[in-house]
Amino acid sequence: MTGPLPTFARVILVAWNVTMSVVCFTMFTWIVHDRHMPGWPDVLDRVKHGPLVDIAGRNVLLAIVVDVSIVAAFGLIHAGTARRSFYVGVTEKIGIPPPALRTLFMTVTAAAWLGVMFLWQSTGVVVFDSRPALAALGIAPVLVDELGPLIPFAFVLLCLWAVVRHDPFRFIGIRQLLSDPECTDEMGRLRTAARPRLLTTGMYGVVRHPIYLYLLASVVVRPVLSLDLLVWFVSLVVLLIVALPHEERKLIAVFGDDYRTYQQRTPAFIPLWPTRQLNR
Image (cartoon, rainbow, N blue to C red; front, side, top):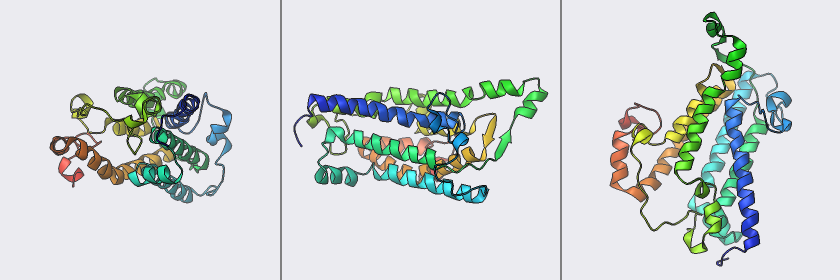
């Protein structure tokens, strides 16, 4: 399919992209409220209802193993759908036009994320609880429970702001759907006449990938930390360490030596981390 998408198809796909973006946004609620889902349909509160398939029972070690495997599967799906061979394959075999490739990516990501939510095996273990210490300082536990989620939520807002700075309509694929087909490449990315600008100031002067820093901080910077969130945090760090070299090769292809110099002086997503170790 080489011509422009029909108007009706564009309208449907734009609405679908928005829906998939909302589904992906549930991740932030899941993190901020430690797997509770206030404000969302009750079926999404898997702390209340338990996993869709209870594999671990009350076995904490087995729950950790299953959860790490779930995160690994999520990472493999997410990485696989970001590869050129995947997009070229679905275009040739299924006939999905390039402007709708980002829609496919959003759909697969949303489905994988729902899989994480519904299959996650709760450990029921609390690793860190600052409420007794705060109570000794005169801060009531009920106040901590009410206001505590605002801390990770602040990092979520920083994540969203970083996305807004990089064109959210392109990020969720709406701009591709509304543009001419020749404006989108074979991987569903919007072509631009101007060379992208490498950001190296502000938080980009502290770490190269501040969105990852904000996401990790939203998981662990909180008054009460569960073992489930700690497993999620460690698994995410491992995924990033594995996936970042591939992502940065694409950035080097775009920015060349400027990005190599940036790598040498700025850590990837951990502030003050020695860049020599991270960039090997």
